Image 1 (tube, rainbow over the protein chains, first blue to last red):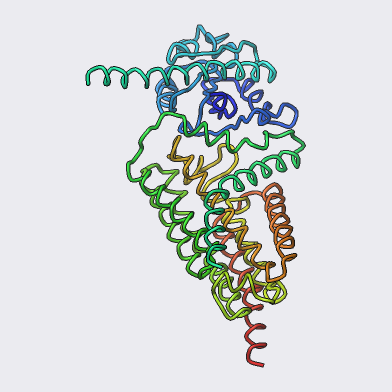
Image 2 (cartoon, rainbow over the protein chains, first blue to last red):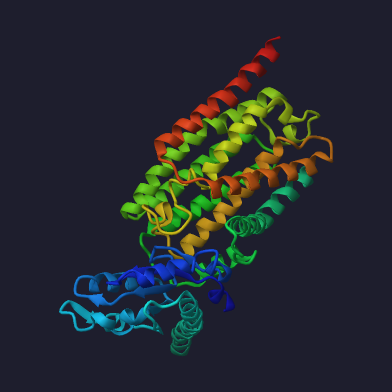
Amino acid sequence: MANIKRSPWLLHYDGSSCNGCDIEVLACLTPMYDVERFGIINTGNPKHADIFLVTGSVNAQNESVVRQIYEQMPEPKVVVAIGICANNGGIFRECYNIKGGVDTVIPVDVYVPGCAARPEAIIDGVVKGLGVLAEKRAAMDVKEAIPTNTAKEEA
Amino acid sequence: MNTYRIISVVAYIILAPFIGGLLEGFDRKISARMQRRVGPPLLQPFYDVIKLWKKQIIVVSRAQAFALITYLALIVLTGAMFFAGTDILMCFFVMSTGATFLYFAAVAASSPYSTIGANRELIQMMTYEPAVLLACVGFYLAEGSFNVADIATSNKLDILYLPGFFVAFVFILTIKMRKSPFDTSTSHHMHQELVKGLTTEMGSRNLAVFQIAEWYENVFLMAVVGLYFINSNPYSIIAGVVAILAVYFLEILIDNTSARVKWELMLKITWIVTFFSAGVNLLVLMLIRLG
């Protein structure tokens, strides 16, 4: 079970971010922070990803995109909202086109505040997300186990 | 002799994924050090595959899983035939058939990225095939046999006769191992213009199968590199292992110091290198035979 925590592959999506948080997310990959130490890879492909990093708030146009990306990711998956805009809309909250934080569209597991969120905070958030990932994987096993038990009882 | 062959085939089938995975672990570690990073743990490729195996299976196309398993089976067969000491030409034919199934796996999912990756994979096959076939011809001209067992147990040191073929073969290894500048069918790092190319639509277990097949293939290709050095002298095995590690390191170095090229350039450079190194070597060998 520890293995799922050892190889978290990220998918980064920029909602309507000002690019501040995006730059910090990419900074995590540089030699300075080197998230590959934890086996983290930035995949750019929802079918390979375990952790969905969203920066920026969700607006009317990208709502369906966020939802579609989330649906394409195989279970177990974790959503990490990076920066205050992704958390609740931030300074863009009152804009006519903004729906608010990412949690208005898809369930969010970890909130990383900040404007922009610092690379240390992002790494911290992702590592917290790993705990959630492991829990979700364990829950999958339980779900898989239940139908087989009932099938046996019926037989 | 027969028991020896059986042992080496069984050892290949069991050990190749572990050796391939470890080589990839070293690859990622050394790459990271070249970029002044710490890099992932050595066993990271195994963690990745185990994780992929445990993820939810999203079926994009039923044909994809079938094609990928056939790809894996054919690649294992390629290596098994090689370690059984059979015809090297036949090994490469089986490998090409396997690569065709990989193409089918990619086009089975009607994703544009996957399709572009698949088309580029076909171009890659076209690019490396002459060097591969010439490598087989070279072994025949030097040894008078296509059989791996005969080549590996002869008294000749093949590299002395086939330096040009060796250069061409190492050159196409960059394509076969999906390293930049020739990683046109699947981009290895991050999100680029073709996402993950060939493997874009391969999720969870399918990607794990693909990864394991790559490990088998890499071990087979490295064994072919070793074949240039190994002869009846037992010490030649050490030379073979050293050559394999040196070639692998060279591939990592090339990977880390070059950016991806367009397929036209890949085709041109590779065919020019193949023609001038393997082709000239071939002419020389023919002249020696005639004389």
